[in-house]
Length: 327
Image (cartoon, rainbow, N blue to C red; front, side, top):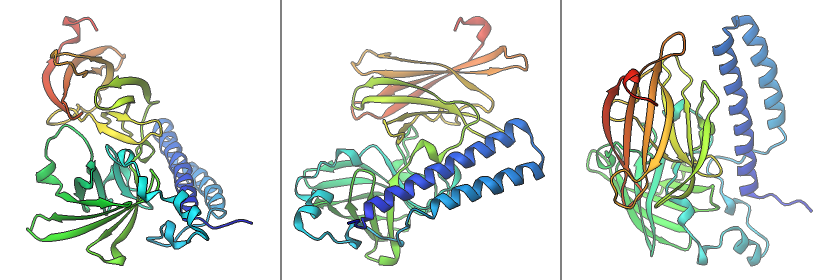
């Protein structure tokens, strides 16, 4: 006998979205790389979109704000299997950016809500929240308090009751319900109309012009992670360098200094070593610009020093002529 399950529906929806993102990425890359005519691209998009949507019809979609408890289990054991609230391990919710499921805006701009949890355990939860102004995530800009309000609260039996203050000085409530490691339900100000299902921010949310490069690394405070880098899909392409987990969820974004990496540059090499001899592994990223013949014109080195809490701070050395340094 088949039973409806809110989490299974949620996962099904994520699978459909991932397939659609891959399809959309393929179309955009095909158009960008091959400069096809509008008519040809329209035909390709129409048939591809039709196939994706037909596939989506077999995956039921939950109503807005639907959670596991919208389909209550028939016995206590089943409920305990779904949400083990009395013995929850909250580590999997940290070091990820959580965005609204069902919203799919390029490069993360336009998410109506995103959060990141910086600390959770011993009955305490802390983090930062972004509302309609980009995507809050771990990076090196050091502007947590200025850009994204901090929320604090208590957590017990899989639920967190938090408060935060907006830029106008007004206090708001944020209630979080932790489902599985890929699902958090968030309610703003106790208003069911402001209830959102959140999922981890993933590299599948972004688009790239080239094939990404990935390799595993062991970093203090992070454990075994994957270093990911590729160039953004745009007319002014820039490198994206991030730490991701085994599922492609974005953990840390190595933004390129104060003004970001230069347009048209690419990552030439990444070196992981303890540069300042404090016992923590640091990250050196070398980016280069190339001429029309593929020759290096100039390179820049970016030093990211790891802190005890796992965060990185950067020291930009500036531009270095490729002719004067052997990379």
